[in-house]
Length: 246
Image (cartoon, rainbow, N blue to C red):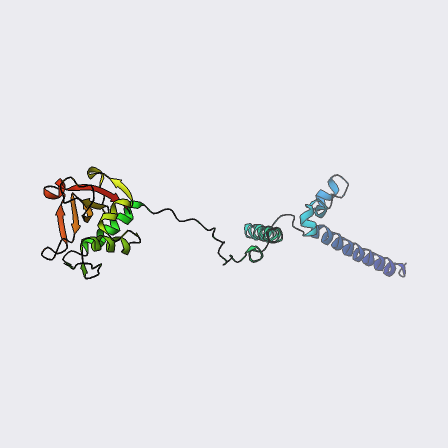
């Protein structure tokens, strides 16, 4: 009887020790899982693992959207830059180089077609003859002289016409045969005016250059140098005809 008591006591101590260790281990497991023992045993089943209910993004740690507005703006800027670069490249391939298209302008002048000069206006040459006569006012008379410093009556008319490319005879009586006849009311500057000093004569024996406004220029004689005279009065009474040679 005395020998069995120590064995039972030893078995009892070991049982208590094992029970205490088992109780301590079970409490730690329930505490770490975040569940109360009462929740565990209420329905007799273990609740679902809370980690398996987390969203997929939290499980994998991968983000499906930009994490911030700055990242979104940066991504859009990069996409816009790539699109703009593509447009520029496409435009560069489509449009030819402006240097290739440029051509140097031709420095050669086109050949000019020959044109016939317009005929000179007769009144222009007549005006030139009248201007020549005006420039000789004051020149002295000399028989037989045809200029340029001294003249006789027909020599002055001959000189003025010759200086402007009009050829006429040298004698006054022959002036009536040149050009076209002009009446006193149709005279123009440069026309030759002829006079018959003898009453009723049809042959001119005096001449001058009409300058307009009813006046003409002539070189009369030694006492009257080259000057202007009016077609009225004496000269109007002896006027024979006018001749247009310009």
